[in-house]
Length: 193
Picture 1 (cartoon, rainbow, N blue to C red):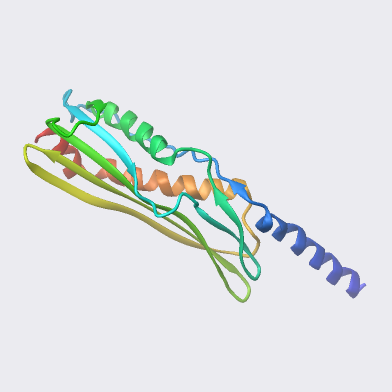
Picture 2 (cartoon, rainbow, N blue to C red; picture 1 turned 45 degrees about the horizontal axis):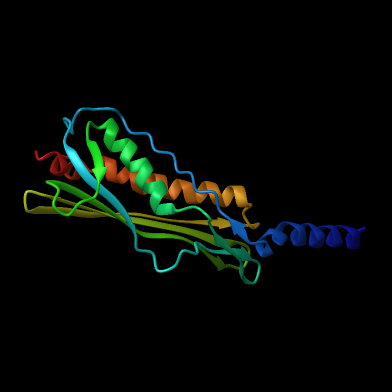
């Protein structure tokens, strides 16, 4: 009886950790809930997002003994961030246009990181998600810049599924974009206030 329980536990662990060896193509779809307002008062902002990550790979899935299969995405993460922030700025009363160096109000969002990392522990493993955006607003010869960061580590007993990994990555991107919209100084600078 005891052998059957032990064998069942080993089989369960192997099945659950099997996803650690399956490459994942992450589905990036961050949500962003921006309250409508008129702070922008129709101000035209030349806007771009620049992907400054060292690697387009997001990371590796965890395995009981170390790194597992790669996590990548087939999506253009910078384009997704551009779309979400453009929509949010529109809700705040800004008019968004293509980026030009000679524009009166310019906004550059630098995508600095979107990383998934794992660590090995005795009973649990760690899953760490890191995301960072840098906002740079230039208006009337003055610059306002700020870094928005997310860093969260969770201890897990079993390897997270692809769906759970997607949820964690999307939560990280949503968080840093929300920080941007919570930065009243940035929005006022863009609006010339």
